[in-house]
Amino acid sequence: MSDNLAADRQALASLIDEASRVVVFTGAGISTECGIPDFRSPGGIWSQLKPIDFAEFMASTQVRQEAWRRKFKLDDEFADAKPGRGHKAIAHLIGTDKISHIVTQNIDNLHQASGVPRERIIELHGNSTYAQCLECTTRYELEWVRAQFEPEEQPPNCQKCGGVIKSATISFGQSMPQAEMARAHEATLEADLFLAIGSSLVVYPAAGFPSLAKQHGAKLVILNREPTRLDEIADLVIHADIGTILAPLGP
Ligand code: NAD
Image: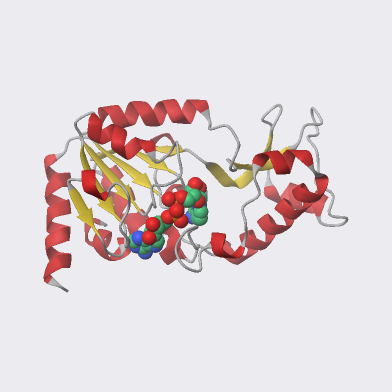
């Protein structure tokens, strides 16, 4: 182990030790070791597929067909993804009551799969493991949507109100979920330590939470293998692999 790595781990462990209310903010980088590519690293999802924005999805049946086609293909690719070392370490710290909340941009359900209770997870961009009617919010399981869709590639509409059904994620151009934004805001203001892990910190409004925490007196740690635009305001910046750094904090 390099001296830097040991010093970084020690510095992180000390900050966590001294803190009484930690908020963890996670991005796609925590799930790359689980086999789910992020958006912005070389070879990331974005370099292969332009995201479909919300207005396009709503405006055209062809776009909705393409969205469901992509969704089921990606689901098949990532079906075996399991929580990684970072998820497990965070779940362990939640168990010791050090961490109050996980505010996540991720949609992959891996924090839940690592055993973290639902009420401790704030999903800013939704969850890709189910679908919802955009009108009446009725939940639909993906198996049902797939069974309706696949024979003739017809995107199903809501059985109750006829509304458009969409994966329960927030697309570019779609409104942010108000309740989750409010909970994340409150948790951030109450934190005395804010750990931003595996996010490029460029997707707003989610990326506003680390600076909000800092402005309200929390210490800010950024863990990312690449520099981010908020590195200069952080109290500790660790440029290293997430799993490698967090594993010793785990069970
Ligand atoms: P991003 O792709 O913009 O940034 C990921 C960051 O993680 C990059 O800066 C990269 O350097 C870093 N990173 C990747 N692997 C790492 C590792 N092993 N160790 C250390 N750093 C690592 O992701 P974002 O900031 O979360 O924003 C993208 C949006 O994409 C979010 O809104 C999210 O909803 C969505 N997204 C989610 C998933 C997921 O749920 N797993 C995957 C891709 C995209």
